[in-house]
Image (cartoon, rainbow, N blue to C red):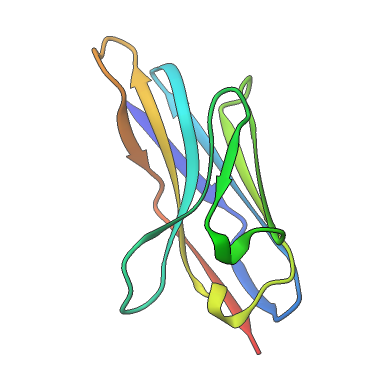
Length: 121
């Protein structure tokens, strides 16, 4: 069984910073891409940032230059450093991992439970 556990959400004023972390644990054979998604009330879940096992990254345009995604392959963790936060960044943030579990034939998507980020104006 594979689990993703997030931490680091909270309430911050506009212009502030937060760091989200996510740790994958369990019967993991390999991890391909890891990323962060977010979902604001009344909106669809959107991809915020993704990083592959080689360290290549991609960001949604609205966070480029403000957010930085990183990962530690040895610890199976992924982090999202969020700077210059704006009220429109308010959402539940979800960690995602494309993971092959021990004994499984293929990668599948695993999700964390979500962590609330609220940015006040």
